[in-house]
Image (cartoon, rainbow, N blue to C red; front, side):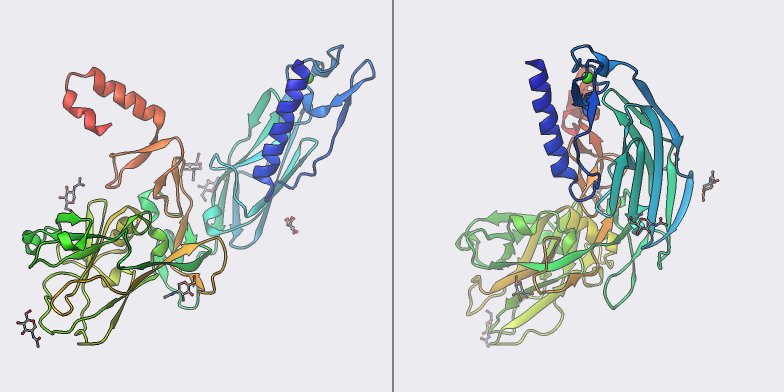
Length: 425
Ligand SMILES: *[C@@H]1O[C@H](CO)[C@@H](O)[C@H](O)[C@H]1NC(C)=O
Ligand SMILES: *[C@@H]1O[C@H](CO)[C@@H](O)[C@H](O)[C@H]1NC(C)=O
Ligand SMILES: *[C@@H]1O[C@H](CO)[C@@H](O)[C@H](O)[C@H]1NC(C)=O
Ligand SMILES: *[C@@H]1O[C@H](CO)[C@@H](O)[C@H](O)[C@H]1NC(C)=O
Ligand SMILES: *[C@@H]1O[C@H](CO)[C@@H](O)[C@H](O)[C@H]1NC(C)=O
Ligand SMILES: *[C@@H]1O[C@H](CO)[C@@H](O)[C@H](O)[C@H]1NC(C)=O
Ligand SMILES: [Ca+2]
């Protein structure tokens, strides 16, 4: 019965492995038999796994732990776009499987690997973000041995360190944002698509600003579900719903389009047209040209720092805009009166990016993809990885720490006498 369970378990592991590694692990799958002393055969995969699979127990005899026979050089420098082929060879009985690590994680889809009789081959077409520490792990069912690190440096960045080359024809060097936790990035392979929403969509909400706006306090006074609830004599803003205020780094360098209609030149120009807010940073866009009377004004805003000002009146930096896009929580667009009344009209189209295929709209050229450290994910490392949560430490935007760390912090706080620290957990 135990054996059957074990086989079922191994089958399911095989299926899982097949599923998750199909793109990269090129090791051919085949049944390799092991002959027990009594002449029966079992699978090689059950050699030295701590379970008796041969009735005479001979599959658990003569086991030798892995030992390195050959490893790659400790320092490798390789040109951008070239193939890097690494070899690790390990002795041991049974012959270990060789797995690969880049900074402790499985290498990405730019790599293939194969393992056979203790020999592991890794072949990667190198991108800028593939610099890092490579290692191999020799694995037997009950033992694993990790090699020394191989430091790999990819050369040939046309921009200086910490910058990346914009994709497409206009080539400019753009600083890696990477949420401040990495300086290794490149132009992401992403396609343009767009979110479209009618301004009178039922999900749209409305907001008004506080009167103290002009003292550079970008505070929302009130949020309204229905436009008719907004009091008279205040300028209402559209408050965009969820899909526009969730991790927008993929919209950087994209365009936001909407329409404005006015029938009277005496509209207010006191307030900015767009207000974006994320992680304690507020950015403002003001539409400068005179609005045309009695015809639609097609407004298109390039999501680039040059178009935005900070609350203190200074020009926004790329870090400011990326911070806001990465952690965006408020997205407001000013309404203009038509025939004396505010009414939602027109459609909003906002560029976004996707890796899920081409929509006929070209590529996103300025979206970065970063090599994120442990605990982070997202093209700009803007999210915490599974098992990690954000802690308000060190950086303005905080850092991602594992759950165990949060648990320890919570204990520290809850055993100290100052109960008011609770909200930091
Ligand atoms: C590897 O390269 C680094 C930086 O290029 C250098 O400081 C280090 O001495 C090198 N190590 C070896 C073992 O060559
Ligand atoms: C590295 O591996 C690639 C793909 O497997 C192969 O085409 C290439 O010839 C190899 N390069 C060297 C130098 O072995
Ligand atoms: C690679 O290893 C070296 C030496 O252990 C370390 O200083 C460096 O930070 C590591 N790099 C990464 C990206 O983990
Ligand atoms: C939005 O995307 C659709 C296809 O998904 C495309 O037909 C349309 O032209 C796009 N609009 C803009 C303004 O890019
Ligand atoms: C424009 O609106 C203002 C205030 O609402 C009003 O006093 C003025 O008469 C209007 N002008 C025209 C040309 O309609
Ligand atoms: C938010 O930003 C303001 C102005 O830059 C700063 O004074 C304040 O300390 C920040 N608050 C937090 C929680 O970072
Ligand atoms: Ca066994």
